Length: 630
Image (cartoon, helix red, strand yellow):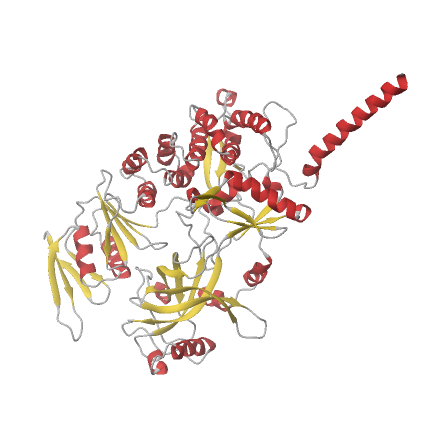
């Protein structure tokens, strides 16, 4: 009898041990962990996809070519024999260009090196910025006023001891070249005239997609299908009225990932959410985890990761995220409202508007979230932000409004010669003119009654002059060109009217930017001129003391919100000549605590290995773009 009981208890104990081993075996395979904060001190763990996967395709892809710039006014010139000249001559012959050598030697043309960084998740027809630079030993001195003729952007492979090899053709490039408005040929900054940028001048002819790689210890066809199934339970779309998941398993270790519509302007956020999806979890386990996440969401230091994990759960988490909107903490309300926005819930619109207005560290993410909520409250709130004194708040609101509805009469703007867009917006704040030099050619005039201060003498390119006498309320715009009849127009001194007039006379976007820069330097503008005043990610937030800390007088804690690599693609970050992100604030400040969600882990696919090597050893394009003093 006793032996039978002992045998029964032994079997039960063995079964429990086996069950525990099955529960914990998945976690023990990977030491890399993101322990969930558990305020009740319980030993509860969740296996997130972040432990199993790495993301591919998040890096910018560098493409290059040799091109020809025309319309220079005597600042071009011959390029000595070189591999660049040979490439361009071959391309010109393929295009049936007559007398190519004569064209290259003209003082009104110049051979240039062209480079661009194709962003992740590009669809055919998408546009991006293109950089151009004069090669060394050329007779050309300036690219101002130049137009880049169409050229093909391809990958370049660096082979030691051999000329660079051309790879696949990814895009085409053309358009007017924007150079530094303040540089002149006889100034120390003349070197800046040897390089420039074509805003939106590149157009993709192929698509770039994201992908997921299973880590080696999880690699199997079964796991590939299970991971894709979990993602598709959360993210899906419709094709021909049929539901279709966004993850497609291709091999035992690779899953193709399409972008969800809500995240098209914030790729990094989409990947963050993917990584926080639970690998396997039943409804009871999910409800228990939601309760724990709600508690940690109310605590500012863990609010970011908690909101992200609730967003990964989906619609079931919406009621709990709404509860966090009642928190006295702006940080908690912001993270909850941000997650709700991507879940198609507009409950947190007012909290996102408040975050954009009050806290610069939250601003870029608040604007990105607002750009997904097509509701009257969103439009109203964003329009009110145009009256703020902060320049980046005003322009950030404009870009969010334009993303919501490009055809909204308030924000639509005017098409100027298919080269740039002019927006004239009423604003109760100080007068401001904003000009872009990245992403899209755009001028925003904040204050529709701005008038140029006279006297003035400005130039818009080499052929258009703008003049006004002291005290005059009108300006005279003249265009002179050899072989053509002179054009003279008289318009009011209204800033927007002058921009329209010079554009009607043929001024390009770089010409208008030059005119505004001169007006600013000569104090002709009634207010400020700003360039690319964009909110950025990775800023430091000073968190107010928590609970008892406030009474004890402890210091406020610094924490970094997100990172530059998490900036929404709606607000592109600034990059240097190497294509590296220009950090606004030093990331190695020892007094700054990371917020817990600061990056998207990325791994390169085997096809990207050559790109990694080329980054370690700069190729010929990198050497040219980094020469001549920058």
